[in-house]
Amino acid sequence: MLSEVLLFIAFMALFLTLNYLVFAFGGHWFFYHYLGPKIPHRRILENEASNAQILKEKRRSFHTQIMFMILALVIYGLYRAGYTKIYTTIDERGYLYFALSVLLMHQLHDAYFYWTHRLMHQWKPLQKYHFVHHESAPPTPYSSLSFHPVEAFIQGLYWIIISLMLPIHVYWLFAFYSFMFYINMWGHTSYEFWHKDLLTHKILKHLNTPTHHNIHHKYHKANFSIYYNLWDKLCGTNHPEYENHYRAVKAKTELAKTSKLMKMMKL
Image 1 (cartoon, helix red, strand yellow):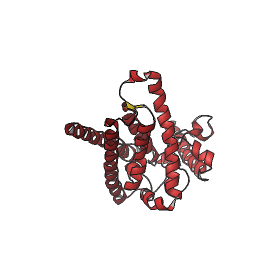
Image 2 (cartoon, rainbow, N blue to C red):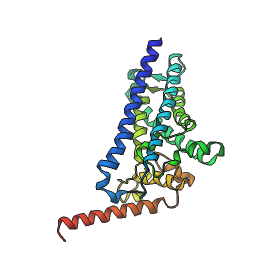
Image 3 (cartoon, rainbow, N blue to C red):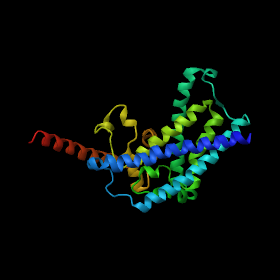
Image 4 (tube, rainbow, N blue to C red):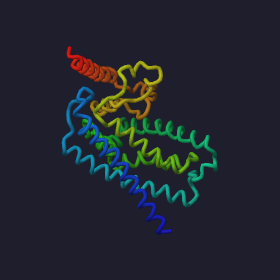
């Protein structure tokens, strides 16, 4: 029993570390050292993160991952005791449910994140814990997990709730964490890559953008959603300057494209 627990701890440590290396370290290197200098016109916020801010983000991210490790051990203990609805064989519920369950998990997390995030902004007892995250201004990929332990607990609690409520294959618990980290990393970059007409597209207008979350870090209010813009639209919590900021960034990008084309044509 002890050897199994130690093996699980080692596996989780490796899993969490690899995710952080890929999405935090890798994301920062890619956007701020490799690609960033080539695309200044895609910058959302002009100010740069200080070395002190990044060091603080790394330290807090380490504490967050300790909290995630503790919560993972709780899930492991609940699973071994037979309290969760986690299953390990796809044939147990079939491939159709296997596919649909992650879509449901995704939608539930979208709602969970919006309402807990909004609560941490609007309920005073939680504000001081969440505003630790808002010391990251502008945000960077390192700030994706830069939380106070209380917020880290709230963020990680979703995995316990979902394992108790929804029959979910163990694979999705790990794959969805990586997906969440990936999306969170994009939201904390200072570069915008979505199409200039995103906000008027029939389907894509419902997606969130890096600009959406950058504006949240700039003004410290509104823009509470993560994957989709549906909850912010439904509840009227989009920041009034969001669309103007997005269009301003895309205007810079279009101007840069035109200038590059004219240089190539020697006009």
